[in-house]
Image (cartoon, rainbow, N blue to C red):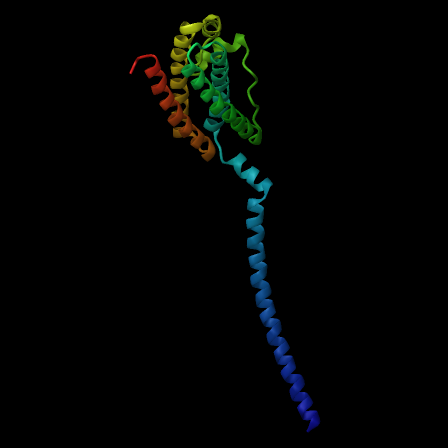
Amino acid sequence: MTAHRALVRRTALSVTAGAAALVLAACGSDSGSGGHDMGSMESDSSPTATASAKAGDHNDADVDFSKEMIQHHRQAVDMAELAAERASSQEVKDLATKVKGAQDPEIKTMSGWLTSWGEDVPEEMSADMGHDMSSAMPGMMSGTDMDKLEKASGAEFDTMFLTMMVEHHEGAVEMAETEKADGTYGPATKLADDVVTAQTAEIKQMNKMLGKS
């Protein structure tokens, strides 16, 4: 009787262990699958994967926009720095400070994109490059334009600066609209949208300052 009970006990334990093994196997399979999914999620959010995703999710329009807008912004910043020194109107100086404050960070942002895409960041534009760049991008001032601005002072400077900056902004808006239409990199098209919004408002402000509205 005791032997029979022992046999029954061993059989029950064997069945229980087998069932437990099946449950563990099933859980192991699920957790393995889940582990793989989590691994995929973790790899997707890793810095390397994120950088790869960013590097892959762009096209030639995004690259062109970033390279050209960096140069475009640099000239606007140069003009704004001149205005901070030479403008006679505090309103013009305040506008120049606003322009520089907005566009300097955007230059850094676009430079970072180009680097992550394995693209070269444009070199600083020399005076000799001014004419070529002005013909390549809408709204860019030529080297001669910049020379005139540097030599102006007082109310003459204010008028010249505002007139040039309106044209410069109009060119930036045109470039940004092209990026919005042709670009695929989300942050770049978002920045382009911000450029359109901010610079359109500044164009209206500057035209009002010029007495044109």
